[in-house]
Amino acid sequence: MWSRRVQQSRSPRRLRRARVFGTVLAALLLGSVLTGCVTNNEGLVPAEQVKVDRVDEIAALVPPDIASTGRLVIGVNVPYAPNEFKDESGEIVGFDVDLMTAVAGVMGLTADFKQADFARIIPAVQAGTFDMGASSFTDTKEREESVDFVTYYRAGIQWAQRAGDSIDPDDACGLRVGVQTTTTEDIDEVPAKSDACVAAGKPPISKIKYDSQDAVANALILGRVDALSADSPVTAYAIKRSNGRLVPAGELFDSAPYGWPVKKGSPLAPALQQALQHLIDTGVYQQIAENWGVGAGTITTSQINGAAG
Image (cartoon, rainbow, N blue to C red; front, top):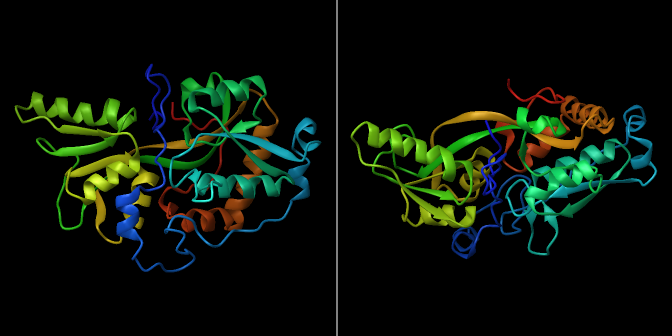
């Protein structure tokens, strides 16, 4: 499975980032009662920040040129809630951000997030401008020809519907389906389903495109579309913040690993892998994922270059 965002050239894909939910959805959610570790920061950011300690034997694996700076320079592209986006104060936050901050802490480093266009992150990693990327990249065989990946999550495609509806993603002929523009769902997944409808003599799917994922969720809540299709953590986050208005439609499918790209052959890769594995084994990783409502895609073993063959 490709990354969820796609570039206009249809080269390696990953979803365009979802923005912090827009005014309509925010207004709908402000009155919701929040529970557990989440505070009413418009319901977007967990209040609890996980603390970790440096692990000396893992810190010793960090390449000397990075260790000497005390910083891990990480390329990110926002917004794409809940993985990485900006809160109302302009700070970059999200599941990827909290996880990467914890991983850096285990290695004795401070995470230094740098914004960049998505298409420029991997070239910047190759050039040494960034030590790594952390921007919901899907680990693919094609990308592994250019960089190494350290896997940290599994994501797929997940549809959502309004509560009380009964939508089958495999039989959505004639329905209106919201997608974020330039995503895999926009370019490949929904068009392929629509083509199958036409081939079977049924009406096509009416694909409704929006510039941001918050607009897609708003449209579904307001009844402007019948369903939405998005990357699974994005859909899970929309459902979580919808105060019961949205629910999953069908099962998650086309699951594939997310990974952090590093320069090909860099010793940073095993350092990252061991730091993440430490967080997995100690339960910190799962706690961070649950804080952001994305626990369904967690992994038990981090790999270097774990793309499916």
